[in-house]
Length: 311
Image 1 (tube, one colour):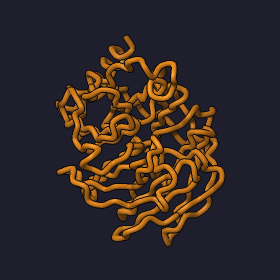
Image 2: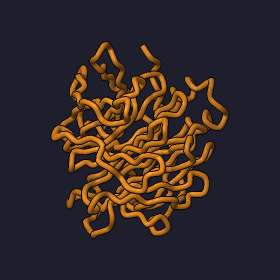
Image 3: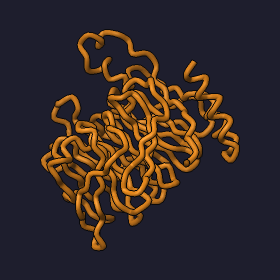
């Protein structure tokens, strides 16, 4: 019943979108395959959805109008471990992914760049000593890539033309750093899935990192994970532990948090296409909990939720 309500509302608010986007916003998009356990999500300007999988280590793609996301970049072809972050960088023709050794098999931890049209692997940037967990990516206007390292409380930077990552920012409060995106003010914002905090990192005129400041929120965040801009100065936040998706809008220096929809099963990623928020659910208990591991998690979907109008 919840999906049906969201579907009807989504259809009513997307008058300005293309026919394909309106049609697809009426129903969830199935992810083709078993035990996908999606962990990350992003979208192109035309509404193409890109899904990264921890369960299979593949990238799945749903083009505009498609009812199903299908395998696009295979784990073996992309030399991928498990995907913990995905970002569409259409301005520079790339799809970025975070490849992390979630199963502790000794596979490399790295930031990878693929051609966004063909899906071909273009470049691979290993984390120093292959340590850490590459979790999410943001791209600056100049093409600089920023990647979060969850257990080591740092952000790496890759300048255009560079061949290796360099540490850009680090702070003990960032242990648990997860989602990352640019705000309308040109500064980087990061979530901490462990502490429930949100931080702002200043970007200096020379490109170096400035102060790391905790952002005050109107209510506590419950496992903030995926973080994406809405295009109108707000953020959409996947609250993984809270099983909900929320919107953050600044009121002065405080971020007002409003819950958009509850009842998801550990949502790690969100993206915004027009007036629609798209949400993935990881169903992580079926992957991590010994009690549920033998059970079938069922199908995985990318679910549409109407983006609330700005107040």
